[in-house]
Image 1 (cartoon, one colour):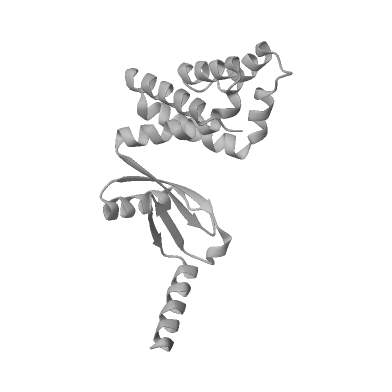
Image 2 (cartoon, rainbow, N blue to C red):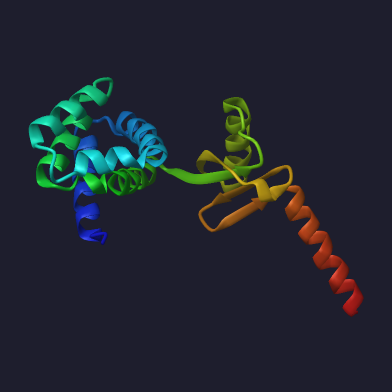
Length: 181
């Protein structure tokens, strides 16, 4: 069972540290990398969260695995492991990133495509969507084979559908509407 209070308290505490340390952008960037890693390898969270693994071993795993990250990020994970909350790391980091994005005036969104977009394509898409929504937009790319081709972007409650599937659905709706008239 997920305890939203734990996620909220820890993400807020780490956010306050990032603000005080004037490293919001750096920690947000690290959080993004870690979110991707934990999403791709959820078994890592299980291993470090294991109740049979002594804290000394958890500490060694954390220090070794995250040696390239800021010392505050490493210490944050050590505290989570010590308190028995490491299994919440992914949720805490996601909530932390939301707080950072709000603080920095960044909208977070998802670009769905059939194939992975290059970093250049993703940046170009971010700029176009940023101009439309009149705010800085940062996108992550997720694969959706149902789109056939093209890209569908979701930012907050707005959807920008440039996919072939979306165009076909619009065309179908127009045909049905014309048939009913």
